[in-house]
Length: 399
Image 1 (cartoon, rainbow, N blue to C red):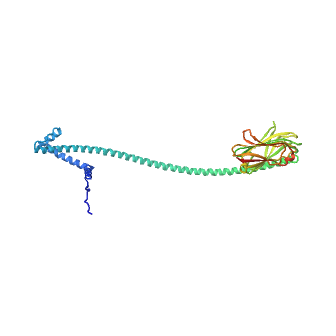
Image 2: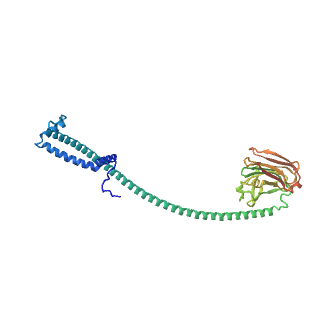
Image 3: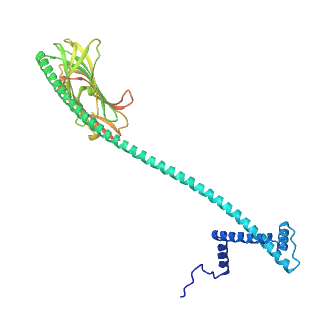
């Protein structure tokens, strides 16, 4: 295979040859070359035009420029005419090239100015980015410092919280121990002043009314009302106990229950002193101010709200509600009402589970705020029946 000579390749087809020729003649370097040749030829022709031996040529060129060119009459003048025409074309080409070169020069100047502007913008952008980077680093450092201060402050707060919590726990333990000792001392003093064999002898609970309101979370509001008649001796106090299942929420104090006493006798007050304060088992000694005189009556009510008190209804489906009384005379009236707020997904039912009571009645009922429930009642209950618990089984059936 023979090697081709160096230089531009020779096109094989006429079309390719024409395109290559145009490219060579119109390229940037080609234009500069032809422009230089045009200026050189124009200069030579101009010199001939100004010389004394070219009068015919001068007249032909001036006639061409004036628009009155006429064909030459002789061979000598014909050469001069064509020379004048060539000079004219070269001058036109030179002027066109000069216009093109000047336009291109100014365009290049404009582009260079734009490049300089863009360069300045780039420099400003780089400066701004550098400044932003410095500001970012500064803010990052400040943020790191704030995080360190935050962690330090958090550590201090946690340490202080632990210290305060330990202090409060120690004080709470001291207060509970002091309260327990106070309750024990008060109980011993009460027993010495009012022996159980003598105090309250012959008393009778004539009426008992229990009322339970169970909300959708099985929190229970309890109302317990008693009508008490003293016996042959004055009655100064009476103990009331509360015992709930282990499913109920553990409660530390009577205050947490909202434990409250209400006297329904004008001018007669009642107060209480805790005697047992366990999480699911509590008791309080209710003091009558003034005491209940022999054969006199006192109408009192106890209210409290125990969170999750009846939760066993939901977990096991039942709960026992019972009462045990030590009466000298008959219990004239006993009633137990229980209501459940709608929305628990179940319905209540009640079944007598303890000793059968006389004149009993079990019927569906509705509370004053529209909750469905049950009411169990009985009358003229003999004291011998009260030695056994009066018990009612409350059931919750999922609907």
